[in-house]
Length: 243
Image 1 (cartoon, rainbow, N blue to C red):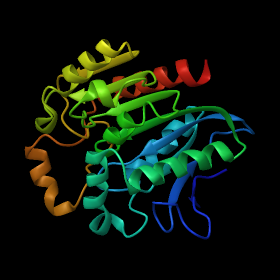
Image 2: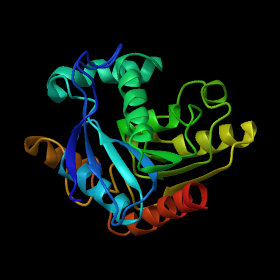
Image 3: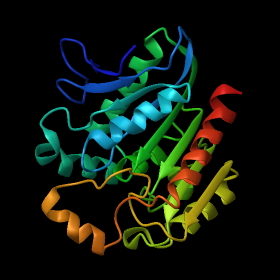
């Protein structure tokens, strides 16, 4: 079936979350059931880049739902409150993510195995959800919580990709790796030497007027590093969701 948008809410919306939550569903070829992946977008929202990420995961055999955390009004209305929810580790965004996860599991098309993947802001959410009933997590240049030993206790296996040129996340890879090592959580964390923030994207993201600034800051695609990072994600999910 062709990828399409789906309504993830009942008539009364998500309890504690969006009044109308939507997502983009990308389905593998065949009848299933399939392992599932919940995908969480960057701070720029559920853009075409994220849709292509979802299609990529579906092509690899995963029923993939890219949830729209800005369903109630777009980035302009929802970004600040969503970032606050991420910083607090609770709130509306987490209610929406729980609803999206349950929608996937209730679809009747999954094996019961489910992973979570996020990019940028979504990477931070994916990291915090790693101990909330998921079987595997993929974290891409996501913020590491202030007290990772507490926030990540009991987490599922995690693969994480960071860029050494990401000025906003300097030291994040080593801090995350050290915390997961101390917790005894299975993990594979790598920092890519030539990459900055958003390096898995296949095109420039964000408002066009800001893109020259992003280039100066080293934000954007890195064709040299992205193929290996994607292989790491797909190998990780294959091991824990298919095996």
